[in-house]
Structure formats: C-alpha cells, structure tokens
Image 1 (spheres, rainbow, N blue to C red):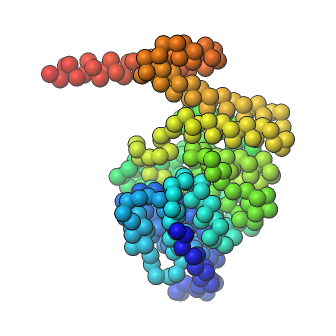
Image 2: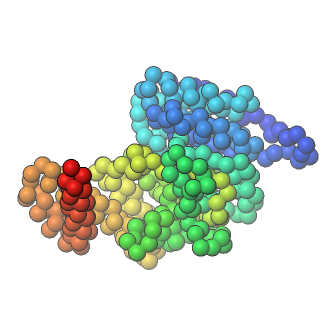
Image 3: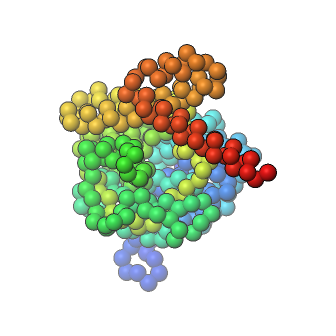
Length: 342
C-alpha cells in the first residue's frame, strides 16, 4: 500500500546565512532489499539543504520490513522524508515513477539506494538551473564497495575538467561500448532533471525496462530538445558492487533496451546521422543477446542452437567467439591454478 505523501516544507533560512536556501529538489530513491545501504543514502540526501523532499519507494523488498525500517531510521525530523512501499515488485522504473507522482519540487535528482552524495552537491548543480538547461549532471565517482570515496575514479573527467554541453548525438555515441576505450557510458549519470520539461512532454520512466531506464529517459528528453550540461564531480558517489542489479542482465532486460532504441528510431525526431548511431547502439545490445543465446545453447547441450546463434548474424559472430575464447582461457587458467595449488 502506498503511504500518503507529505507536503514539502517551506524554504528555511540556515543559521548564519541571510538568504534562504533554495529547496527546489526532490531526491528519488528506489530501493529493493537495501537495508544495509539505504540509511546512508537517505541521510546523505537529507543533508543537502536544497532537498525539499526525499522520496523512498521500497519495491516490495519482502525482507520483513528491514529496508523500510532502515530508511525511516535515517529521518532527520525535518518532515522532508516520504517513505512509500509497493505491494508487488515492479522494478526501478515503476518505483521512480511512483516517487515522481508523490512529489512536487521543481527539480528531480535520482539517487540509487547503494550510492550516496557528499555535502554541497545539489547546491553546485542548482547553480546552473537558471542557465537554460533541463538536465544538469555532475560526474560520478565510481568507488569499490567498502572503500572510501577517495578511492573512487571519475566516470568521465579523467584528463580535463572542462564542462560539456551534451546533445543527442554526443549522448548516444558515448553510450556505445567500445573495446578501444574504458566504459564511460553517459547513461550512468544521475543529473538534476527539470520537472516542467518532463511534464511538458509527458516523459516518465518506461516501466517495461529494468535495465537502461536512465539511458532511455535521457535519450528521449534530448531527442525532444532538452539541453544537458555535464560538469566535473561535485559529490555523487557511485558504489560499485559485483552483485548489483545493474550488473546482471537477462535476455528480457536486453530485449526491452533494444525495444527502447526501436522506439527512438520510429519517433521521427532524429536525423539520419543520429539514426545510424542508435542502430549501432542497438547492435551492441543484439550482440549481448546473442552471447546469452549462445551460452544457453552450450549449457543446455544444444549444438544446433549454438550453430544457429553463430550464423544468425555473422556480424555478431566475432563478438560471440571472442567472449567464448576469453571464457575458455579463464577457466583453463583457473583449472591450472587449482592443480598447482595441490
């Protein structure tokens, strides 16, 4: 059952400061079995004076209320925390849309339940809110689980610190995985998003997607003319966990992501050049689907399925065979290491 949202508090004047804080941001946190990290995420959001409301949506964790309890335990008593619970697990897109409907601040900031923000982040992003941008992002500091933020590495700004204006073309091109460069897909970013722009075009998260839902929302916004700014890191810490949901994709997740690209191609809003980029992005998804199908055939002892995958699209064959070879080398290495240890 969904709890009733509370009214966001009026802007408050911090101690020792003459001008009122601009409490203009809804922080959205979708959570699933996150009792170990949700408290840190909530506390970091409430520590941002610019947060008018922090909306946590528990996506039917079914963990005896542990996630809900941990979220509520982080409440600072200012009346800004709203905690909701879905009756049925529906994925992050549904949880975030639920939070959007229950909130009202002018800007929206998504925070993953594993992650947290350093003090001052929202203030630095809001400083650009009058410059005509509908999406305002800072870099991510990708930090291994259990390590301090200082151990993290930025996603984007590694050699320079010059802010970037991101259009649709740049965004799609930099979401295509390439062996020649480190992974730095812009779909991982967590920008401030202007609510008025989302409402103008009826943009919400696609609830059929459990993978790449951020990429899809940003791509649709940019295809509709949204302006996006990316600045160096101001405080978002992305905790890298080996067992995170974002690291696990099944065939349905990838198929839904491919369908999102198909909708972009059919929208009539993108140029021929951009359509070629979207098709390249979709091809990379199809290659990952081919790998899943290949391994399903191998594990199931179905040689004809394995052969069918290899022949289905010969452009994907090198990708599939390369992964198969790498997997063989890893397993052979583990076997040799295991024998040498005895």
